[in-house]
Length: 354
Length: 282
Ligand SMILES: Nc1ncnc2c1ncn2[C@@H]1O[C@H](COP(=O)(O)OP(=O)(O)O)[C@@H](O)[C@H]1O
Ligand SMILES: [Mg+2]
Image (cartoon, rainbow over all chains, first blue to last red; front, side, top):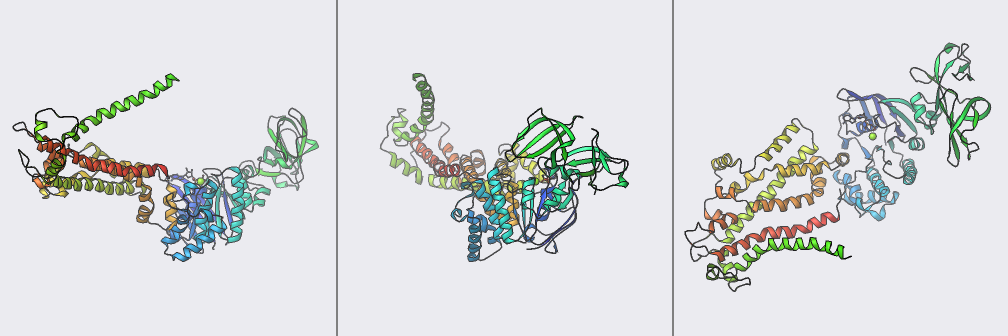
């Protein structure tokens, strides 16, 4: 168990900068999720922590010790790969025991540690099988078992669930959460799936193009997205974003369609400034006055309904309502944001305006 | 119904015809090795076994003088061929699996240069480089030695390329997982790469053993004494130039014996292939 500190870490592949200076201190026992779209550099960052990728700039410290120049085996970490990376010719037992054998741990202790991990992961019956004789979920568990028996300072997960089907993924997600609560081992977990991030993380680091867009708890990231990118990435369906302008007295946002949405508090200094206005679909409600939309599509999800509406100026507006649909396509509807549901972003930089 | 049965029959007929065409000469050899020199010499070889088999094989094996000439005993030639074929097969496998491992798994300066260097030797089989190779072997004093027979044939681009292609199918994550587990390059090779390669090794062993066993030109050049004779060159030397009649019964017995080790290797290794197919895992 240990802290993991990442200090202004950079990574270049030739002229291309994949990681552009990331800073984060992960607490002992914390579960940090690296979330971002494919190609944003999540795996690269994780692999630098693992020692599988060189560090171009900055420092990584595990348990207070700078590990920049240590081999992976000396960093006291264990990693779970997306494709499991189990040794195909070894039994489940040997797969889990291999790292311990190399480290010269006595046979009896290896046996005890593997049995314990197998117990936790309900793999006891499969110890003599080969990976090819296991299902995807079971292989995933073996990969986790291999990490657990090492009793490392930190776990590194690289999209460990993305090769599983939806149902199994949900199941394993819960299991990983339970396991981490139980073992309390500092974890870095890479995913592009916001649901995994929201449910597993103590904190989320939202990444885009090699930059940390925001670091915060799942609720912070959802409630106060630091940028348009985060706002669009977290939440499903994604946040509505409309062009607007703060009125001359700094009291409301004016939209091209003529609507005027009062601000929760006046912003005299921003008067007249163009902004991007974000409103989550689930924070819109039917109202007497507001956005008048023509409904183009109604998605009934059972527990709730997503309505795709078209504003008079042609923009799409999503509204998420509880329960089964009460409206139909081509109906007209007037909706308005609930109190405190407005997010303002700088029209140029996309950063949140507080 | 009738149509499909006819269509089913065609491949069988072709197969049977093929087997007969291939098997008939071997059958003739087998039968010939059981008759006495006189019967064969008259030109009317029967198609059923004769009674001289034991005597012919014993004579070939120990190399007692035939009626017309003195030959190197088959047991000596078999041993020479066996040493040569095994050295070539095992040597080629050992060298090419190691060089393929280096080229496939490690980044080092001039990696691709080395790869291409290996690759272009494909254009230089023994026959092409035979005179310089002979000179080198002669200068090293390796004429009439096992080393001289085997070493020039060991360097092999083909096997290196085959292993490299196979290694490229081993996912990078496996190497990375091993690195995190603490396995260095040597351990990874022994604990992971070798076990995963065993069916490839078995297949290559069969091919290379037969390649080595059937070598003709090189052993002909590099051996001059009778006790370094290999069986393939030995058989051809038994067949005279026409000045005298040949001991066909001994030649045929020798030929049958020469076929046995390659057949044994194929039959024995077949089990490995089947095993490899059954628990194919990577
Ligand atoms: N070995 C490499 N050589 C060159 N570019 C690479 C290499 N590995 C990754 N990259 C680049 O770095 C960026 C981040 O990749 P990666 O960390 O794998 O993204 P993610 O895991 O978020 O999908 C990508 O644009 C990718 O093309
Ligand atoms: Mg990735």
